[in-house]
Image 1 (cartoon, rainbow, N blue to C red):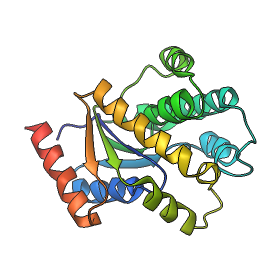
Image 2 (tube, rainbow, N blue to C red; image 1 turned 120 degrees about the vertical axis):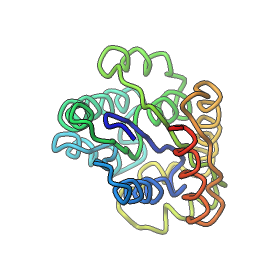
Image 3 (cartoon, rainbow, N blue to C red; image 1 turned 90 degrees about the vertical axis):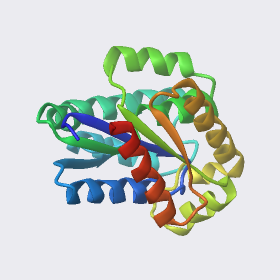
Image 4 (tube, rainbow, N blue to C red; image 1 turned 135 degrees about the vertical axis):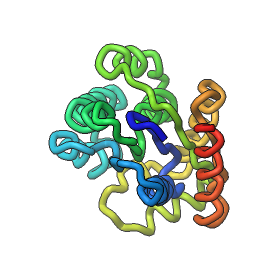
Length: 207
């Protein structure tokens, strides 16, 4: 694999995307790749500060409009300080969430603000992944997983099952909108089976 390659993982809360992004990073490192594994919101010092504002506290802490601004600010810092330098250094960047999450969470599930999300993205980010995996699974099971972690970062899980169902619908719609880079993986399987499917897609995509 050539460096300067950008892979993202997306999905509803508790879908297993964080685990799968780490597994892929480990696999590619074993193959001799120079890999940076990062996350959103976060991935840089400033973005991690903003992360705490977004994922902790009362579900009604921010309006969808304010969330869009906070996510965009965090993503801009992440892009400037972490993602872009890594890509320019020919690293493979694997990111747990990126702009697609904002398109779905704030642009569709919380409010109909997709146009606002896209405008801000074009102005301030203007970067898309080369390859995106959407881990799809039963929202009720995923929500149970997310709440069972007791991580303290459960603001979006606290919005309830109906919100998670809207998120799933939004991610599946996004996969149809961007079929060239988005691959939907059944997250209801064992982690090993999910990882195997992802590895197959990566190998096919590169060949």
